Structure formats: structure tokens, C-alpha cells
Length: 506
Image 1 (tube, helix red, strand yellow):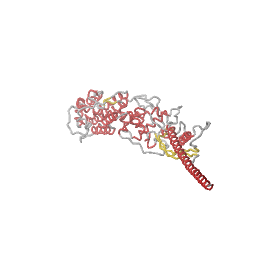
Image 2 (spheres, one colour):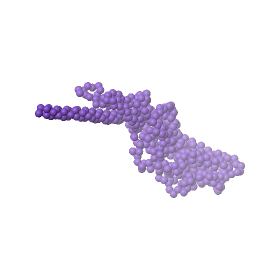
Image 3 (spheres, helix red, strand yellow):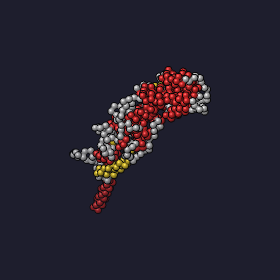
Image 4 (cartoon, helix red, strand yellow):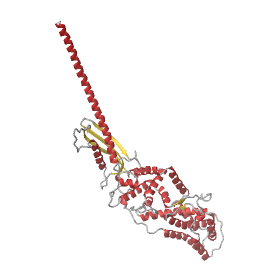
């Protein structure tokens, strides 16, 4: 009996021992699992903190864009000099490291009861591995920002309107090459001979008629505005001529589609001054003219633009006169006796006088444009301002002195003719342009690379006003796109590394 009780008690004790060992093993596994889960949760939390700290550091750095540049010119760039005279990408790297580390140790200077750092970050590091500067790719980053900004302000209707205006202008071929071609034809037409030896009277008459060109040139020069600005910028400070810093993330060179070209031109017209609409306190008084011409002197830029404007208006007025039959008939009455005396085609002399008349008309047009008035691109007969009597007195004096008989000679045409489309054109387009409209047209034909760099030159010059915080501003020290490697180490043997690319518009 006693043995049975002892055996039963031994069995019970054995079973209780099995349960204790089982529970010990189970608890060991559970504790290991819990620690693993806690460690994994800690790692996941640290990774989330790492991603947030990375994003926060990037946002903090990109929030330090140049405020004046944004306020005045609506573009975002980080000034790598940070308003100093030492532009260096290391400045941005230092600030990235500072913001990144602060995100893991926000209260490292404070002491809190029961304060615990769940991440236990023992080391942080940020390495700047790439960056793009505003001047890279002939100014592509700057141009891209400008086009994006302007595309949000102007819709398709504006682009279509400007495209139509430029197309009409271009269809008349109002270029310097066309002007020189017509002038050359005029001079050769008057200077030509019929194959016979010229008389003294014919030689003098040709010389006097050709002198009308000098008379027209003198008239144009007398109409050029006086009191022009003599401001200048140092050539060595321009982006095109100075030695520039270069980024490591060049995404290609600047290129404009026709629509982008129009949008960039409108940005220039909006932000830059010109002869008619000068911008207060700008370094050059004629900024738009600088972007078109590229001279370092205000007076040179305006003079060249005025010359191109004169050529454009001369050709437009020449076409207008040829389309005005009453004006052509008036000129032909004078041209017939002269052509007969010189044995030249009447059309040669008529077109020569029409060219002279157009130059006189253009001189009045340019003055009106410089006063801010609008002028029709192609005029109707009643809109022509200059009177032919202005040169008629000189022509009649020539005729009376040489006693040239009246008459006409229907010799063959010399090849001088108005614009080919003008004779068959059924109507005159109702397009009026002012000085700034012509600037838009001239800007459209400036090569994009030169246009972008010259625009940046003007912004730099205006930003560098003496005594301001941007006194050392330069676009080749401005970044809008970076690439950096972020890494951390923790006391829990966690290490995280990530490469990030960041820019304002991507």
C-alpha cells in the first residue's frame, strides 16, 4: 500500500516537473519573439525617423532660397554663398548635416526626467554628391523655371496671338537683309546706263538723285532721341565672358520650342526695363535692348535697336506706299521725265523715290514709337504721315536746273519691285504695334543661349546693388537641384543609408 502511494506521488511529481520545463521553454521562445518584435519595431521606427529626418533636412535647405530673387524675378534658387563672397557647395552640405543631425537630437541641450532616445543615433552624415547650377547648360535651369512660371500666367490664347503677330511680321520679310537688297537694287538701277555714253547732265542728275539717300540718312540721324543713358556694365562680370562655376548634374543645354520662346520673351518684357518703360534703379536703363544687342553700353544698345527699328519701319512703309495707288501715281508723275532723260525704266526711278519716301516716313514712325505710340504695321494710304512734297522740292529743283524735258520711256523693268505679296493683297491687316511689341519681335529672333545669359546678366547686375545683402550675387553659385547621400548609425547596431535627389519642380 505504501509502495503504491509512493509510486503515485512520484508520478505526480514527474508530471509537475514536465510542466515547469515546458513553461520555461515556452517563455524563452515567447521572450525571444517579443524581443525580436520589439527590435524590429525599433528598427522600423528608426527607419521612419530616418526618412522623415531626410525629408525635413531637404525641405529646410530648399526653404532657404534667395528671397529677393523670388520677390523680384519669381524664380527659386539656393544661393550657395549664403549672402557671402564665398560660393561653395560645401556650405550647403554643412547646412544639410546640421538640419539632419538636429532632427535626431532635437533636445540634446535639455535634460528631462525619464527622457529616453528610442533611436539612440550615435552618428549622422550627409554627403553632397551632385548639384546643378542656374548657369549650367547655357542657363537651362533658369530658363526652365521661367517657362514654367510664365506658362501658369499666360494661356494658349496669348501664345496664339503672339505667334500670329510674329507670323505676319515675318511674312513681309521686314529684315535687314531685305532692306539692304532693295537699297542695293535701287542704287544699281539708278547708276546703270543704257549702253550709250552718258552726257554731263545725265551724270550730274544721277549723282544728285543718289544724294537723296544721304539726305534721308541725315533726316534719320536728326530724329534719334537725345539725352540717352551712358550707363554700362563691366564685360568681365557677364556670364558669357567670365569664368563660371560648373555643377555636376548638367541635364543638357537650353532649347526653346516656339511657344516656350514666346513665354520667355514675355518674361523679359515683364521683368526688364526698356527705353519706353524704364525700370527704376536698374543698372542699365535699357535692359531689353541689352538682351537683344548685347553691348555693354546703354547708348550702343539703344542705337542698334533704333537702327533695326528704322530698317523695319522703312520696309513696312515701302510696302504701304506700293499698296497705295494714289501715292504711286504721284511719284510716277515725277519719275517719268527723269526716267526718260536718263534712258532708264520708269519703274526703276519710281521705286527709288518710293524707297526714299519710305525712309522719311520711317523716321517719323520711330519717333512716335519711342514716345509710346502705336503705329500700324502696314499703313493705309490715309495713314501715311510724311508728304512727298518734302523731297519733291529738291527733285523739281534738279529738273529745273538741268531743263529736263518731260516724257517717258517704257524700257524693260530692272527687277526692282515691291514685296511680291503686296500687289495681289486684297486688304491691309489691322495690326498696330508699339515700341514694346517690336521688342518682343526682335527678342524672338535672338538665339536662346544668348537671350537667357543676357537676361541673367541683367538680374545679376540689379541684385548686386552696393550696400545690399546680395552684393556678391551670381547665378553660377545658385542651385535648384541636388543629389545627396544620407546615413546614420545607432547604438542598436542599425545602419541606414539612402541617396536622395531633390529639386524645386520635380
